[in-house]
Length: 147
Image (cartoon, rainbow, N blue to C red; front, top):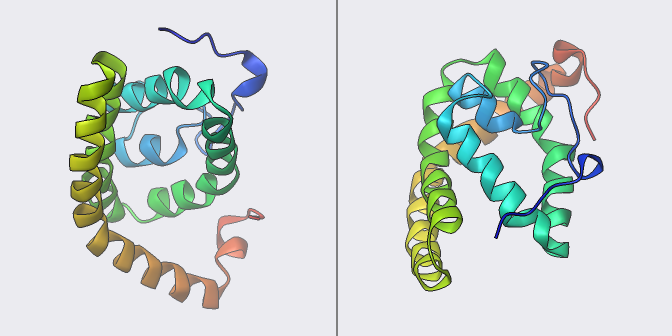
């Protein structure tokens, strides 16, 4: 079932002016048109925006992810780490968009474990960087105000 997303439900604009709101994936993969970023947009449109909790998650993502996208864009060495951390979610997106509910549930369990394993080192590195930058005034450095 394809869900038509109303324009008002999807905030436009991003840190690089690409629009559509896939801030972190666009920063990590380098292009809004990249196939893995497109898969994540499909997950958003076909799965997340069809439920109240999903819409809440998307709103929170749009609120907080520009900060992280800017951080990824400033520190290019973060991009491969973030790409690696996003791969389980990209795989889950493919499965959820293209297969049955039963296959999706099995994949969610498997990919959740894989995601946690992939994220452990990258979250540690990015969190340490973030704490270090906050001490030096990251918002001033980026020229943005974050919530």
